[in-house]
Amino acid sequence: MRRFPEPITNLVAAFARLPGVGPKTALRYVFYLLQQPKADLEVMARALMQLGERIQSCPRCFTYTESQMCEICLDPKRDSKILCVVEEARDISTIESTGGFTGLYHVLGGTLSPIEGITADVIRFRELKNRLETEPGIEEIILALSPTVQGETTILFLQKQFAPFNRTITRLARGLPLGATLEFADEVTLGDALKGRKRLT
Image 1 (cartoon, rainbow, N blue to C red):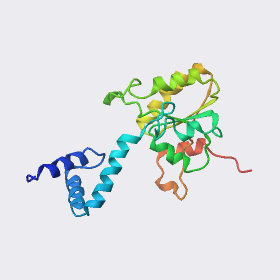
Image 2 (image 1 turned 120 degrees about the horizontal axis):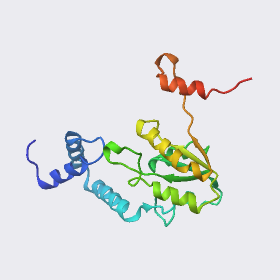
Image 3 (image 1 turned 90 degrees about the horizontal axis):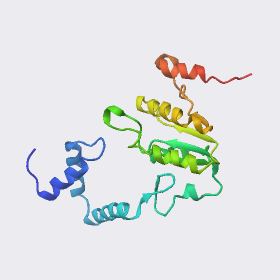
Image 4 (image 1 turned 90 degrees about the vertical axis):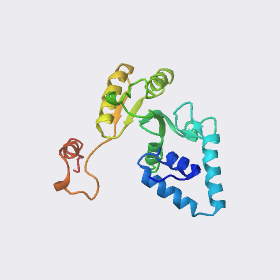
């Protein structure tokens, strides 16, 4: 790659740190920004600065918030008996968009992957365990993790660890998506759909 002025090289390196962005894509982003008005670049720079200055983690559920505690944890209308455990903070917005969940959340900050060095000490397992010990009103724990190998490993681990707490532990249902055909369904998805079948009459 040819040598560029230092500001270009630095920004390419910064963009390349984003997930899914390689050096070529990062360079394309930088050249796009160079064609934009300086006023637009200043707006973007201010937004990035505010992200670091004003956004923090909620001390209770560990989602991102601008205040001392997030709006969901502060909302008295939320059902404090149900705790939904998610992998990342962005998963909360996905679940909230359904309008079908009114409980509280806990962000693990990842899933277990011993090969990659992600153990229970790395994710927020200790904080979750402490929360269950200090909030006896929690009756159900929903493990809303992705159906990946790491997600399944984490679900099994949490299920085993929290069994002595005598709380209801559930997981998200899995099955065939709307519009899917049986021909293209994998065995695991089809098997889960059969196990989770619903009675019609």
